[in-house]
Length: 301
Image (tube, one colour):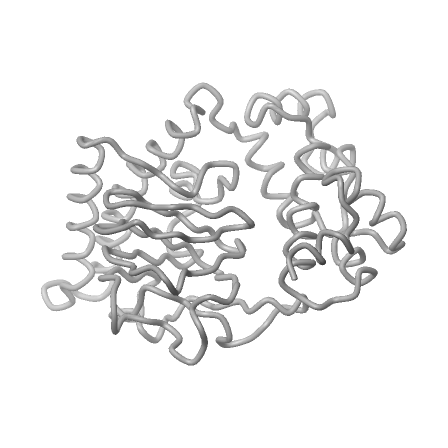
């Protein structure tokens, strides 16, 4: 495989100025929608930019560490992983590799669309509410290592099956690994009794697509065909918060990303997250963070 570290400065930048890296299809064996291989020196995706700049990816990364500690920033939180831990980074999350740490272990990259929708739902690929850092117990780790090892062998074996069948086997092997990983993630979040049902899943996906322009609970409920009461119950069962709180949290996160990692004027940041009026954006941001946008940016510079 060609990579442990997708690095900032790559193929392009979003309108907010944060670099976003696409899945490197040209480096995947057989051009399939996944990669798996070792982390370590000599394994990079984009060698033309420093490791320690923030960036996004438009695909999933799962890193299983065999050494540590490794410090890695994901959406304003520093995570420290040790040997036997996993980090799961999802599309769109702003993250940064640590230049001071050595990344050792196995890294898996998955392109959105490689797996069918039913598998995406069953494995919680877009459960942004689940923790990115996972600490499996001995039995869980052994099972995950075995599943990941099998997946890597299937990925590297491009000679014994025709391409179409090889891809199908990869999807099945990947699904088996992800089901174990999803179970670990849900257990880690103590969410076994509050797994997101279809109502919350659809709401969460709609918010992810529309938070920049739609902050209305009623509008989401109407678009999804639910009553407001049904939506409130589903979101509270899945996350412990109200739909409005869920929307606001996503808006605040995106605003923090833009304030911290771009030089966009405050007014443009507000407009990018659905507040055409800069004063209203400042009030909203201060209400949810206790700081003005200007103060938040100054603290990080």
